[in-house]
Image 1 (cartoon, rainbow, N blue to C red):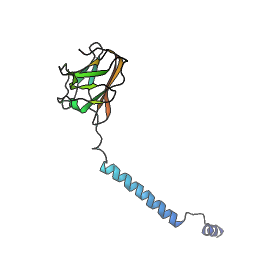
Image 2 (spheres, rainbow, N blue to C red; image 1 turned 90 degrees about the horizontal axis):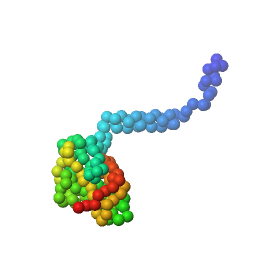
Image 3 (cartoon, one colour; image 1 turned 135 degrees about the vertical axis):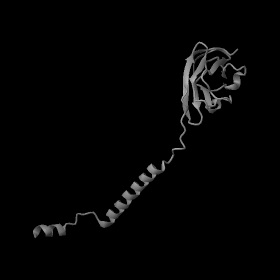
Length: 164
C-alpha cells in the first residue's frame, strides 16, 4: 500500500494545460509538413538554366556552342565584362560574325547588357568579342541566364583584339 500512496501524492507531472498546448503545436507542425509535401509548393516557380555546351577560342576571341536545346533564345541571356583595361573604352560582341557588332551587346561599363538577337541558339553558333579604344587584356566575360538568374558561361580572355 505504501507504494500506491507515493504515486498518488507525486505532483511532478506536466500540467494538463501545458500538455494540451504541446499536443496542439505538434499537430499543427505535422499538418503543415504534410500539406507542403503533398501540395508540392513552389515547383513551378523555379526555373533552371538551360544546359549549353561551350568551347572557348582564345585565338579568335570566341565562345562557340557545341550543343544547346533547340528552343533557347539568345535574347534570354545577358553579357557582362568584369573589368576594362586602362585604354579599352568599351567592348562589343556579335553572334556568328554578324556585321552588326552591337547585335549581341555593346557596353562602356561593367553592367549586364541584354543580348538582342532574336533567333534560338544552335550548335555551331558563336559569340565573338572585341575591344573598343584599344586591345584589352585579362577581360573576363560572364553570360547570365536572365530567367533563372544563373551564370551560363564565363571565360577570361588574356588578350582581346581591337574591333575592326
